[in-house]
Structure formats: C-alpha cells, structure tokens
Figure 1 (cartoon, helix red, strand yellow):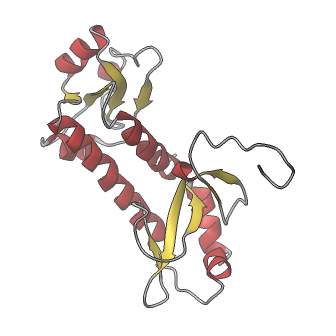
Figure 2 (cartoon, helix red, strand yellow):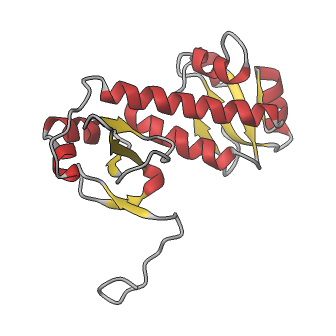
Length: 196
C-alpha cells in the first residue's frame, strides 16, 4: 500500500526516482551511479558497487541535464566531480553489457548470427528477438522481419555485434525464446535511450 491507500503495481520490479526528470519508474529503465572514493561520480551499470545509488533515466537528455544542472551533487548531498566523458562511459559500459549477454546466449545456443541461420530461426518460430546492425545495408535488413509478438534491436553496430559472436562483423542475429532474451532486451533498451 502507498500513502494514499492504493496498491502499487510493481510487476516491473522495484522502482527508483530519476534525479533529472523526477519521475518514479522501474529501475530497469534507469542507470545507477555512485560516489567513488575520491568524490567522483561513477556509473554502475551492473548495480553492484557499494554506496547509495543515484538514479538517472537511461536517456541522453536526462543525463546531460543531470550533469549541466549539477544534480549529482544535490542528490549526493556533497560536492562531487563529474567526469567530462560520463555519457561516453555509460554508453561503453552498456555496450559491453549487451555484447557480453549476447555472447553468453550464443554459447548456450540461444542466439545465432548470419542471414541464413536467422532466416531459418524466424521461419521455424524459434526466434523471439531480431537483432540487426544499425550500419548494415537497408536492403538486406528489409528481407527479415521481427517475429510476431517479438522484439527488435537495431542500434548496435556491426562491429559491436561481431564482438558478441566472435566475428569481425555481424549484420543479422536472433535470440531464442528462452534464456537471456529478456535481459538482453532490457539492457539494449537502456542503450537505445543513449543513442536515440
């Protein structure tokens, strides 16, 4: 029950308040920051660092606002230093997180790469998520469509997808219906907010 006596819907998990927008939302749409040992702001994408979390929406505008208006210092209730490349650090950590999860899915047999294999999975309804490189050919990408009721990820580059699949570059990939699919989609959605 909340203060007003209404039952809260927490089916999306725990909620946190963004310091930039003031909105309370599920924490899987936010990025956690902590104050480091030398009073610097450190992104905590994995949400495992010790200390009180400072939460910002996974959105470039919200992050820029938090930096420009010195909202990190207000939230920490102490003077802090914010690295000049904070947004780039967050983006790099999120790319590493998404590609790491994709690599785990590939190793467990829940992800495939390559046009023919992806097309085969889509035809057999084995794929739940279609992933295509943002810098791939539009004509080639238009030949595959998102599975019915499935998800689409199209904001990773061919090089980033290549890292996940142990290749130079990857344009087409698919995730199966089980395993790490939900986590990959959530982490990729946070990355999309920074790249949109």
